[in-house]
Image 1 (tube, rainbow, N blue to C red):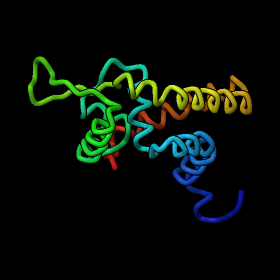
Image 2: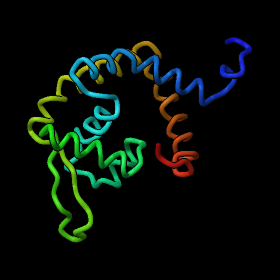
Image 3: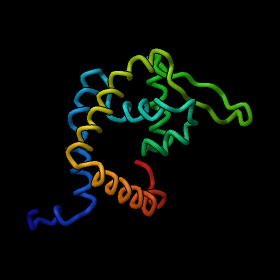
Image 4: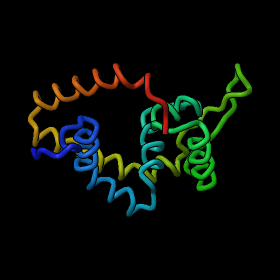
Length: 148
């Protein structure tokens, strides 16, 4: 490690690690015509029946307005479905359409293969410890920080 200011910052190191381990599958995401945020939104719906706009905003680290714009664009492309909440007409639930599921299935496979390479490189125990530490950081700082 160098003695540079940025290299002493955990936030910089976490961002750099995320960038480095995500590079290959984000390239595949871009090659299929999706932005990183679109992929994050579509990917988080992969194993969910549906999420509300506010739930989506929280899990993709975006403001409600940014999430709404992303959802609107993906609805236009036919990749998502939207339905009104049965109890609260102000809420909408968003889910993958068949077209959306078919479009991201190859990307899910790429992401899973990338995850397997990371675990293989680090080793299972080290990867599990890292996940535990990251979950702790998220638990301590996640709710305190806003989106976007």
